Image 1 (tube, rainbow, N blue to C red):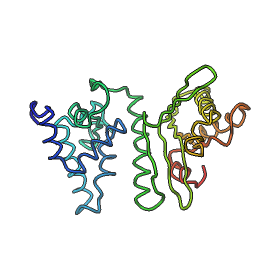
Image 2 (cartoon, rainbow, N blue to C red):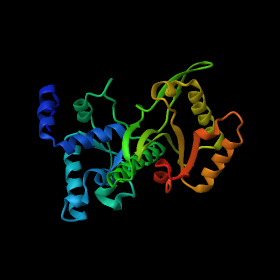
Image 3 (cartoon, rainbow, N blue to C red):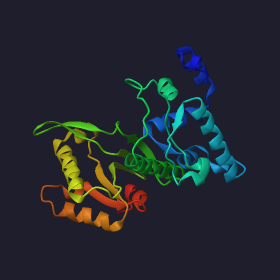
Image 4 (cartoon, rainbow, N blue to C red):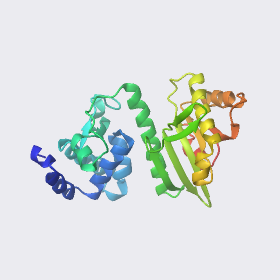
Length: 267
C-alpha cells in the first residue's frame, strides 16, 4: 500500500479491496488489542474449509503478511514460543492504517512495544475469547455479548465520589433457557492476594450500587480465572472469610475449567 493510499479516498479504495474476513480480523485485533497468529488462525481459518491443516495455516500466514505489509496490522518484536516457532509465533496489534480505516476515536496512538506482563495478560484474555468462540460454534452455548476492555468498564457513584470498575471481559452466554452473565478477571498469578481482594471490594461496591441491576435486571457474577487450583481455592477462601463481601457474587476457577464454569457447569 503506497503512502498516497492513506488518504481518505485511498482508504475507501483499500477497504473495498479487503475481504470480509480481512475486515473481521482487523476489527477483532483492534477489540482485543493483541492476537497471536495461532489465535487468528483458530477463529478465522477453519480447517474444514481447506484441504488440510497445513493449507489453512499457510493461508492465514499469507493473509497476515499482506495486512502487515499494508500497515493495517503491526507485528510485535516479541514472539510466542520464540523465533524457532517461525511465523506462527507472531503477535499482532492494530497498525496505523488500520486505525485510520476503523476511524478509532481520538488521536491514533503511536505504537510502542508493550511490556511482557501486558502481552502475557492480554493474550490470555484473547485466548479465552477464542475458546468461547470455538465452543459456541459447536453448540456448547450461544454468545449473547462479548465485551473486551474498555467497552466492558463501568463507572458508578461510590461513597467517595465516582468509581470505576475495570473487568478484563464481560460475557453473556445463552445456555439452554438460561442466560449466564459474567464479569471476567484473568489472573496470571503475579498479584498478591490483598490486591485481588481490593478488586473484589470494587465489584461488591458496584453490586451494591444497583446500577447494573437497574439497567439489565440482574447483576453478573464475577469469575476469577486463575493458573492453578490451589490459587483459586486460596482466593475463594479469602472471599469467604471477608465479612464485607457478598460471597455469592464471586466464583473462582482455573484456565482448564473456565469454559465449564462460564457455561454453568460449576467451578
